[in-house]
Image (cartoon, rainbow, N blue to C red; front, side, top):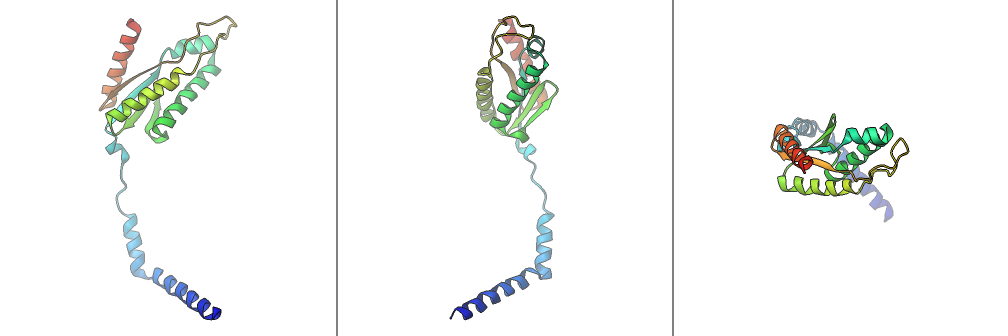
Length: 162
């Protein structure tokens, strides 16, 4: 009884293997690879421009090593919130693409909150007590990179007027 079940199951495998190797199936598989890839960028119609406030001052006050570490921490927060593929760094700025303006702004507020939790050292690189502040970000949102940049610069001017 067990030998008949073994022979019937092996026969089934042989039949399936023969089915997969037909020329008709190969052309179907090739045709499926020739379909056009979907571009996610076409569906990510909003962009944000994000900068770390007073980055030059932080570098001068605490040194290059802290500066590099801080940039990595902020990048990690952005990657966690948006994903690595949506966050791009351009010089001192981060550019983020998203499909909805509400989702983008709510995520930016979470990133801003988490960045605010990063404390600056109490002692600067010269060994003097530093003015301990937390890390702040300035961001702008728009349909294009230019709109996001203009909005970010407007917010930065408002922030430093106060």
